[in-house]
Structure formats: structure tokens, C-alpha cells
Image 1: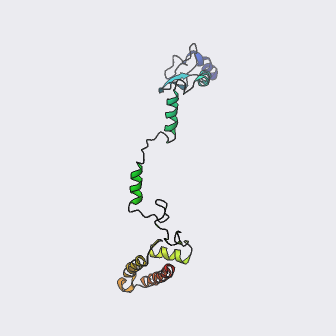
Image 2: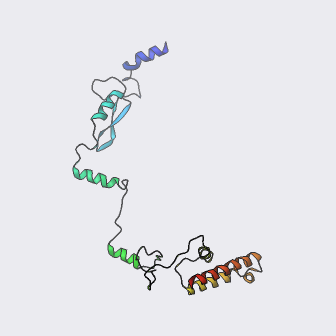
Image 3: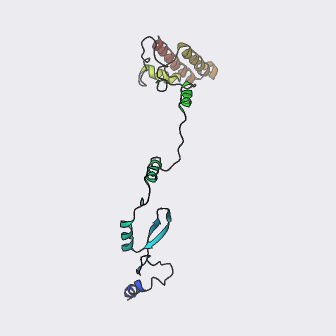
Length: 192
């Protein structure tokens, strides 16, 4: 009985019950449950349609209708950065200043030939991380290219820090010092 009453009230009472909207299509007495934007410039202002009328509206509606070619071009450009603001990186002079700065470029990506061997025109050999030389570089906290003076200075720093006498005769410090000595010897051979 209750189901039959609700079906009979379905169309007749929608317009009078609070909380229900009528379909905005002329002459329609169904509930307007589905929203559709009124215009491209007013996307938060809606028509409310029943399912059949919102389908008709969506078939006819074109978001870009009335947009000029310039508007479309701007829309495409903005969408390439997801409508986020962007800024130019700067003039070529600013880039040259970056390259000429105090930045380390071991692969020569920015300026090309800083790390090239002058005699042969090729980059110095780089050990792999799994080789003895690669492991020695990691232990010493260094990266190629480097000079013997840089290696020696780093070795002195590590010896002062990890020497057993500086660590109260600690056995672990003694083991670390042995590993540092082996890495130093390996890198000395690598550089010569």
C-alpha cells in the first residue's frame, strides 16, 4: 500500500515538497536532480534537469562554443602545465653565470670539457661502484676526479677522527682505521 502511494505522489507533489527542485526544462514536471553548467563563463551556476533533459543538454552543449582561436591557444598552453603558473628560467647570461659558478660538474654536462684529460681529449676513467676503487671512493667520501693532494688531505682528516688513540683505544676505531688505510692505498694506486 505504501509503495503505491509513493508512486502516485511521485510526479504530482515534487514541486510542493521542500528540498526538491523541478526540472528547468520548460513544461517538465519531474525532479531536477542533475546539474548542468549554464555557460562557459559561469561554471558554478547550474541548471537542474531530470535525467532525460540533462542528457539532451549534454549532447547539445559545447564548452568551447564561441571561443576564439586565441582563447583556444591560451587554453592549450595553460593545460600543458596543469594551469599552474610558470616563470622563465632567465636570459642566456644567467645560464652562463650558473655554468661559470662554483658548481662541480664531474660529467661535463654543463660546460663540456672541465674534466677532460688535456692530452687525450677524453674523460678520466671512472670506477664502478662494485669495483675495489669504487668502494674505496665511498669509504673515503670522495668522488672522481680528484688529485693526490685532495686524497691525502681527506686521508689525514679520517685518520685524526678514527685513530684508536683519539678514541680511547676503541677496537672498532682500530678496524675502521684499517679499512681507511686499505682504501687510501687502493686510491693511491688508482691515481698513479
